[in-house]
Length: 211
Image (cartoon, rainbow, N blue to C red; front, top):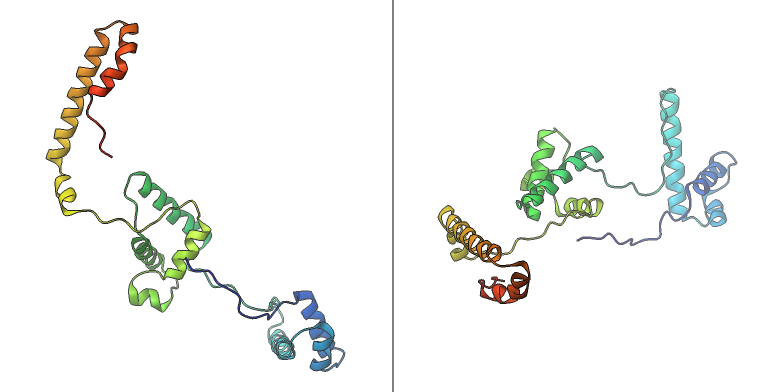
């Protein structure tokens, strides 16, 4: 699973401190260098915030009714699915696992792509190229839904696959039913005390479990 590790120390100052520093530059006429030293903010970062504030001020003059919230630093990655859509997808994966039809990681990524296309959501170009969601989305999806257990399936031998058919399944359950009938008859034909005392011997006569 991929984990993002911060590589720089940028945008460590709180937003209110950055707003005060920008106000000193724009309103009080202080230089970016002196204000950056005063508030311990990188000068290039403060200059960028000042230019961004100037640009947003011009946009507000052109569109007085618009309100643009102030944001500093990095923006979080845009999610393809909203919370409700992801909950529906997670519930489907839970139900699939409950009926022993769990999906592999690549199957989940393909399913996410199909769901996004069905809902006409905006998706990255890499999803369209590979017809599947990316590994970063899958890792983040599992972090947001830790109750899901999606792993790579183990390989199944050809002999085991070919032996799992309707005929062999019917034979297994027929034999299982006959064994149950024999055991129940033995138990019901003996007194309770004798049955309880001989139960370990009776248990030893049964076929061992295949592990």
